[in-house]
Image (cartoon, rainbow, N blue to C red; front, side, top):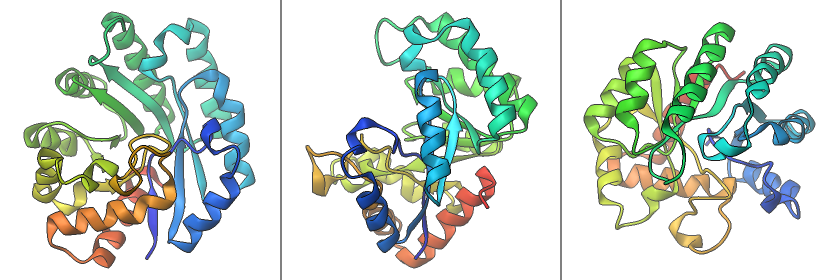
Amino acid sequence: MELVDTHCHLDDAAFDADRDQVLARCRDYGVTRIVVPAVATAGWEGLLALCRSRPGLYPALGLHPVRLDTHVDADLEALAARIELERPVAVGEIGLDFYLHGLDRDRQQALFEAQLAIARDAGLPVLLHVRKAHDAVLATLRRLRVKGGIAHAFNGSLQQARQYLELGFRLGFGGTLTYAGSTRIRRLAAELPGEALVLETDAPDMVVASHRGERNSPEYLPQCLQALAGVRGEEPAALAALTTRNAIDVLGLD
């Protein structure tokens, strides 16, 4: 089976000690492509260097809403210039986070809209971070249409999921599926049409149940696949092929 991890922060320092060993195990387990999204300008150079130096790694560049206090206006100009130069597979990780207190919503919205405009001008999809803000994100996407993308770690409603699909988005599912207590997410993953689904780990965060309390890793993506197959009552091999095709299509992976 061939799998795509559509969201993994492999450039994070948590992987500094054993990154190549992790990638070797990924290849053994069929995880052949990994999308590595950025969160702030300080990490862009290292992220791009990592993706250039190892096969199967694909960069996305963006300014994360949770890092709002670290971003400055010049970062948007730098983002547009770097995207033109590097041609990443997506603009991301971008979006709105209304869950965390202390993050200015107006500044988040302005940053989000500016990055959507950059993505639209570049003809690139986007990787969305959305917490407690799906309606606001959807309203923004309807105004500022982009070339689809992925709603990462999707946790909205079935109705919201259908709205994302209408806008050309896929929905990312990962470690949360492996917890029996995640009934709402597991039910949602079972109800959605197959063309909506892509897999992700969000490593080193959102660890799978079998490694609770440890660092998450892209090598655990097959466990997310098995959980998805279980809730949908489908064969893992068929879902591997489907989610891989969905990821390749929406992100334009080679």
